[in-house]
Amino acid sequence: MPQVTSPRDSVRYSTYSMAPSFAPTVRTTDSAQAEIIHIESGLARMENKALSKQRVVLSEEKTENLGKLALGAKLDRALDRRMAGQDAVMRPRKGTVTDSEKEDEKASEKEDEKAGEKQ
Image 1 (cartoon, rainbow, N blue to C red):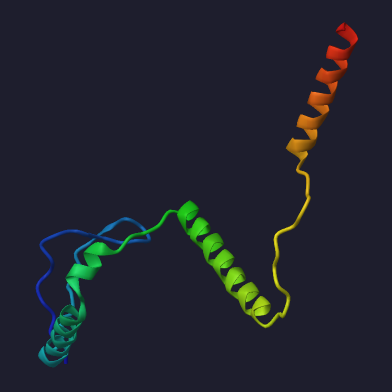
Image 2 (image 1 turned 180 degrees about the vertical axis):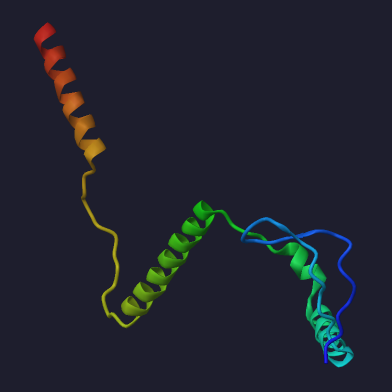
């Protein structure tokens, strides 16, 4: 049978009415308290304090960026596996002209035309 202790010295407020409560608390039995202490000490031994100091809580933006990076890495691995069995040989293209080279050619042609008109 649980034993009832004397009323609490501190005031405890109800979460429903915010009225102070001086109700006596029920004392747990010694065996239950010993079991709780045993479990608590076991959990304390299992906790690695050095690792818990290193834990980081990422912001939502960093979590999103890491997710994108992980997805990109996953796609790269999948494409590597897909292309690994292919017999095709990748060779550099010959004679391709880039857009910047085309613009340079047009600019030089206009300069040549202007120079020809002046002469």
